[in-house]
Length: 222
Image (tube, rainbow, N blue to C red; front, side, top):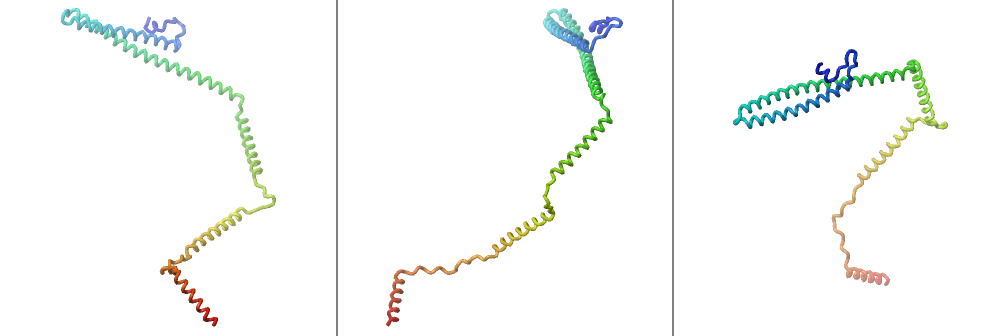
């Protein structure tokens, strides 16, 4: 019986082969078994190496036998490494195949569902329905436009004429403001007097002037 027959089992003639899930599971079990074998061989290699070092000068025969066993274990370890690489590659291929199978199955299921959904649809009826919907939307838009149109109750004004009048009023107001600003700039400011203001007359001078005025009034009366 072949190695793969031992791993996957023999179904006999006409027997049903393993499913991808079953094959992947078997490969994982084989990987675990070989990993344990690797660990065992690595421990044996270390033991034989210690034995060879221990008997290197005392018992050369024992040391040589230990080194031979070490070589055999290393050869088995290399074979297991190659086997694990092959099994890992095969397991990944099976997992990808299984994934693709599931994807295709789901896509086929979706295609059947879409076909069932479109089974009772007639493309001509769909076109007629869409045309009717478009027509009704246009009618609804026209109705909305009519309803939203402002009603002047007989007062029909030219929007352009009103805008022109408004712009003219704004220009007149702007020109007026500019003239006021220019007029303010032309008004001369009062100059600062160059002579000093007269000092406040003393109180004595005021009294003398009052006496002179009294004498003058008396003279005029005579």
